Length: 249
Image (tube, rainbow, N blue to C red; front, top):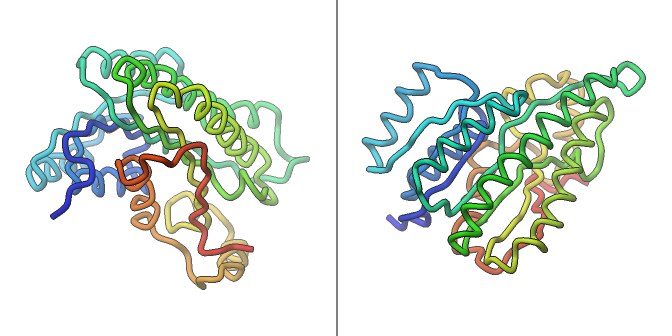
């Protein structure tokens, strides 16, 4: 079996469920050692990573921090730094969604969503990119959304935060390229996760109907694109936003 991430250490946030948990498994299958970032300890997750360790002979270390708490994030990052491990990849997946029309959305809610979906990601990236700069290599992928490109009714806070991630991706690709660090983003569409379950069925069906491939995507399909972008297969790809949306349009 070809292992695209053999001898690489990758930091993945949002590993507890959905795209993050699936990516954790796909990366482990491909030989990566992983710092698996989650909000809180969970026995089921501990059992899951133990199984991955044994099955794929990789090291997976859980790191706990709360994206709404800056000190908590800093403590999590210090744990990674203290390991003195060269970090080859960072995948910023963790986040939250809020559904509500603009006139019914409080400024507090907008601030909270932007804090978790954008500001916290930048703090994590700031810490991890310093490690990458020291080692003169790395690949960073930010998980945005088609809502950050096209907008989506009832998701003004979420789409704004995801659009900010895209802007940061393009700027960081310029700033970090001189250090041999690539920075890209992906923009998933309708993917079968807990997050999309929060959509009303009629809205979910309407989005699926717009796709050229008439179905929702799977977390595995997203994880495979993340695998490509973190691996050396994409060694000349940076500053890009790759849509994973079945051709919505």
